[in-house]
Length: 115
Length: 109
Image (cartoon, rainbow over all chains, first blue to last red):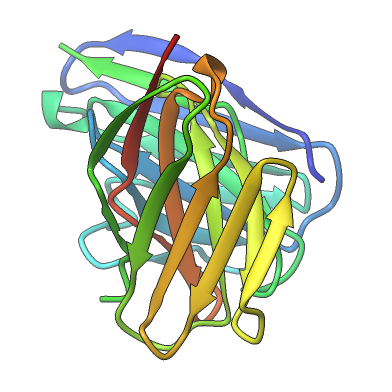
């Protein structure tokens, strides 16, 4: 299994600002995913981040709002841009060693509150 | 959408009882996974069952998969207060995983 860390673990931000969340994995992985979990809700996939290519965004999520970097096989960042209170959520990164046949492991999450 | 839908949404049982949660989905899948989440923290992977499997066990957990009915169940036997958490199923058809709505389980001591 992979060990995943996220920074920051939580933050309180003012509307209109941006926050970059870091995700670090202890081993090289092909696929990294970013999810959002709004209060009391399930997880919604924001995008898939593969090293060496642009992230693939899900319907309802755009690169201008959630730019993602994936500089190598152990690290990724998600930026939440021009934040509003509706962006208050838990943001989770996850990894899978390959495609859909493999277990997905999650980081501890970043709890974001936008005032 | 492939999103899994789980029932019940919430379940409250006494310690020592069994807890059963169900997940239904809409399209063909490669595998189905169950996760636990404590108090809005990260998800812990519990078990993965592939589309050609019908049942898997792991400790006090038993998962079944019925692809003809597009449904899965998670059984937790002899529940403990520490099992109190939200439980999610996640289905995978291509490269990504779609999560269900979750079941909030409360085990009373």
